[in-house]
Image (tube, rainbow, N blue to C red; front, top):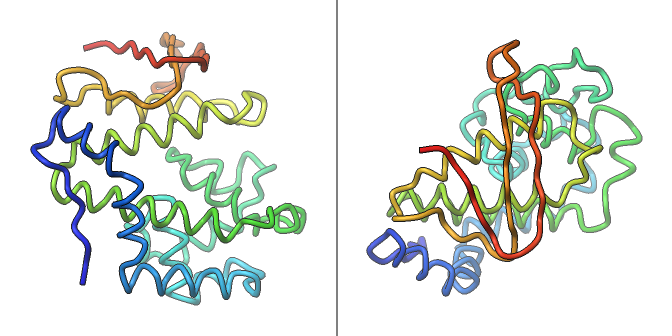
Length: 233
């Protein structure tokens, strides 16, 4: 039986309810039969997956991998995903680097199929990390079934936390700016105010470069406590 996440009446009250019950509700989602089986299968088999072709040839493995990064819309596009995963991230002309949506690059970076060094650099808890992302995405999608604004707020909180945790020098030019722009869309949620996102203070300063559309010449992030979000109406 599928567990349906409780979001209450939405808005600020719904956000407060989600924060209070998130851990318990996420655990209940993880115990759903299909979710539990998919996670167990991924943990068991990922150690034997040595290539992008092997991953996309196993539907259940590819399903977990894509959902972990919110890319489940690409499940039918096996050839495209294989090319993304095989991208040499050191080559700016590779597919993952050329795509506007940098989520594909992050996925390729995590799996490391584009280079032998990338696969060898996987942490010991690699499978657990991907499964955790997979369950988190399933949870967010189920929140969205009741209230899409709250789903966007959860997504923004996760993305901003991940972005703040990465050192500036580890993020390719343009990628940080793209991620900030994507998350900034969530700050216009009709919750009465910007959603609180834990012990993080975020100040974003951006100005147009006047060159290619969508590029930023300045983007600054500082993390401390508590959060403060500035956004244009």
